[in-house]
Length: 101
Image: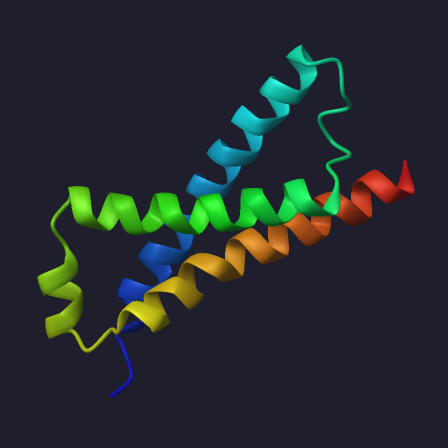
């Protein structure tokens, strides 16, 4: 069963906001540490990617949406993939932008 595109679009935009928030907080922390906030190491980029996915799962739990998503036929694997797409695209764009500078 294919999930409703409205639900997927909503979670994609929510995931993009989570990635932006995690990336911004990580950048501020690195700026205070004296490092370049745009040029993360590969390990730090992977951590930002995984942390933004984890924030998405925690937020679903806080909003108590697991039962709703289960009733809509969305497995946790599918939800994780939905949360991973904006984070992967965002990290790729930032790494390309940072490499071009």
